Length: 447
Ligand code: XLS
Ligand code: CA
Ligand code: CA
Image (tube, rainbow, N blue to C red; front, top):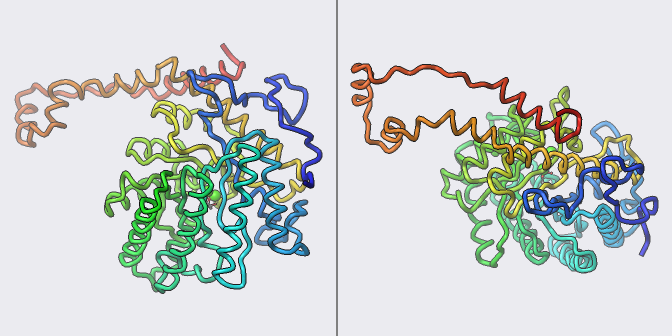
């Protein structure tokens, strides 16, 4: 087999914080036990197929810049797809990451008609199965690309034309079959075109009904074929459409409640989508956990000055530590993991840049895990939250929540003078200092 990443001779080693080599992990040590569990099992990292292997590095103003021989337009489409897959598995194995994720269209080229496209995907799925058996790499999730082709310009499930809905349904059925065949532990739906460009031509309520119908069909099919993975919806507020219905975790949660899908559908939260929605990544994760719909993470970051989805590799331990703290507090991932839905900058043209990007991202996750574990062990944040809400366990708090007290009862107590609330400090700055101290200690820059 051709070696595509010959500059990186073998698996990236763990070299510790003082490692001399550029391409060595400083914090990511898969077997290291953190709170009694292997680092790899906490993080469940995944490489994504689309940004890393299917993109030539174009942007809306310019063509591809990357050195990716497997995308050469001169190679026959199925031959190119096999080369791309060889490159992908070589890369993931050398990186030493346990999972990958894909869209149907990343893996297999479109054929002359639907039947040929389906055969292409089936053949590539069998080819992937061989690579997975050989390397031990597993599938975190599969998904269908329902946003690239012109037939989906006006949406897939929310298209005004039921034939577009039906085509999307066929494509998703196939992508779930592929995910199931490869032992995937989740299936993702990202509604990039499920939204509108203008309200002038849009019936909001009708499109919501269509979207709910689609999701229900997906859940029914999952059970019909015995797919045990989780179905995940990925929120994003806009881009490519002006407004996307799965705007943020709260919007998705409301939608799932309204259509009876809570317990069947969870969320895949992307850091950059959280910031586009005007939230912190931390907020989106806490919202999902607290409402029982947390599934998985697309790890990346945006750019503070750009208002679009720059999908850069995560590099902030400060931001990621709090996210990991919440995940650990909630008991960790079940089916989810950290998928690097991140792409190189257009000028990072060397094949080895892909390694630098992922190694940095993994070290950021690993370092954040160590900080989060310390925050858990120290217990101060948990204690501060417990203390802040402690009175809700008393007779008044329980009476209110357990519905024994009416508005009139409460007024009576206020009139009688037994209720006289006294504000207490939220201690925000003290807690911020506490987090910083833990961060600095874990990073070895303070005591
Ligand atoms: C695009 C999304 C997409 C999904 C998978 O912004 O992040 O890549 O993760 O379709
Ligand atoms: Ca994503
Ligand atoms: Ca994105």
